[in-house]
Image (cartoon, rainbow, N blue to C red; front, top):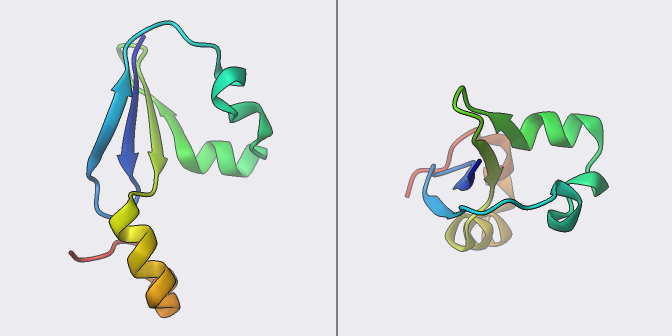
Length: 75
């Protein structure tokens, strides 16, 4: 089982973990149920996809808070 990280805004591939890891060691147990449902999904092959935020989108949102109203940022 691999864990793939993607930016939730621009869909950039942020990386992957290809070894067996406990979700508690990644901090998923600190998420609320709604946060986990929004950020984590499971693929048919058993892989996990995590929708986080990349540095570019974080910077854009910090400089332009009105962008929080958009589902996807255009870069």
